[in-house]
Image 1: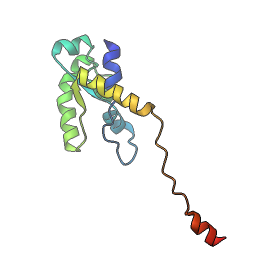
Image 2: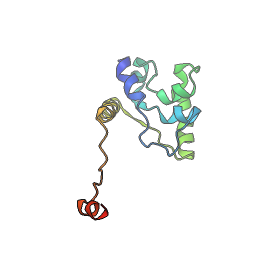
Image 3: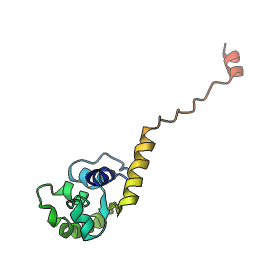
Length: 122
């Protein structure tokens, strides 16, 4: 269960910022929460609140849900995407990202010089 929660909750970055974020912004944008019932949060040790966990690592995990309301308001204030969703959606999103990033980069199209122009120049 912990692996199911940990992998997708570290797959934020749905919209890459124009400049690499640092500090708290990196923690906010690099994490994703998993929505669910109180029982689900309990079974995951409240690590389904991964954004709050990264922002407040020393906070007792039973307080994450309380802090999440304020954190979400902060995201809205600064127009950041608060990434959250049900477990199946987040797992799919994480594996899709892993698969996409494991593919080789597309080769840039190289414009070959016109052979006629080469002969004229010679």
